[in-house]
Image 1 (cartoon, helix red, strand yellow):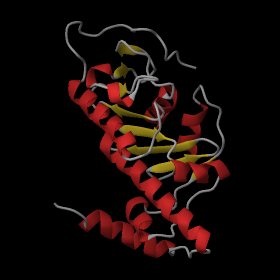
Image 2: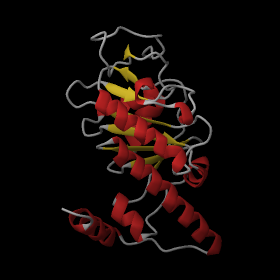
Image 3: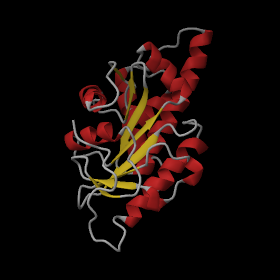
Length: 231
């Protein structure tokens, strides 16, 4: 297991701040979590990877969202060495770094315990495609991985094993992890995960919804990706 809790780590380029733009993006993405109702107190975190250096910027551990600034974000190597930052990195840093080391396409990771999605996680239940919004955003069900021990790399390994092509995964008895090409893209996936989990929860109180057929899910997903928004 890597050591993620060195105090300052070595400093690259004293007198200048590493990755200022990515720090701003990661800080802004972290601030979206409480605004979207996805976290309570200091739980949850967002990280982003710099494409050029491979360094990762992540939220500091146990700091109030109200206090967060870009300068407080912690810069890590992919091996977990703190190379800039006066704070300890998130306790979930090991999880994020495992994902980055195994998924070259992932540039951002989000973790939340958002209540409706985490209720499904508590039961170890994936969320089938009952909604067109799920087809559009996810292109398939939101999977639920197995329980993994907190405090090391086991959670990251389970994410890599079980997430497939989805931008989101639930971890049994734990919570939600999402990935994306940017910090805000990963936050959007976390917001949409909670939104569909809430709607599906309410639908299940009324009865048993029908799943959308897989071929229609893929058609809707392609249509959404190709035509939604401005070009």
